[in-house]
Image (cartoon, rainbow, N blue to C red; front, top):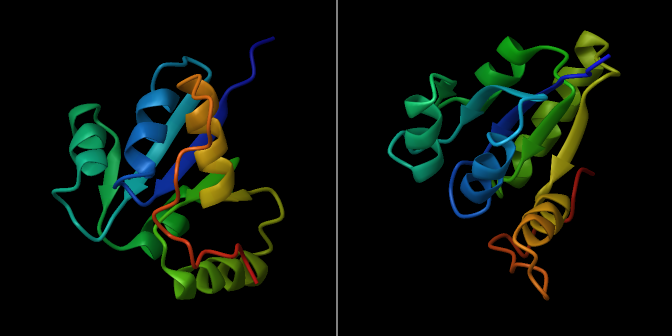
Length: 129
């Protein structure tokens, strides 16, 4: 039995775009949507070319995606993380895992077979408080 993972990505710039490129290579990953405040960001352009739903309001993606398996949050917006956490608490969503910058960077580094961890573009990102 093949399991498929549903994933949504918030942040389609320097970290989100390479991760999105990697995710799109696998049939067992379904990218439900991508959000970025810049509709012309590289990740938004990639998502649009693949027929993936694009959002400039990240909370709308969170609401529309519902109980997605993994929400990748690499926007660097510290206030957004709290809003997402509150939304999941209010809606009783105990399924979705929220992946932040450090784990995304690790996955990108592994996929690229990099001898070092790719650098962060959001050094203030301390995860979800």
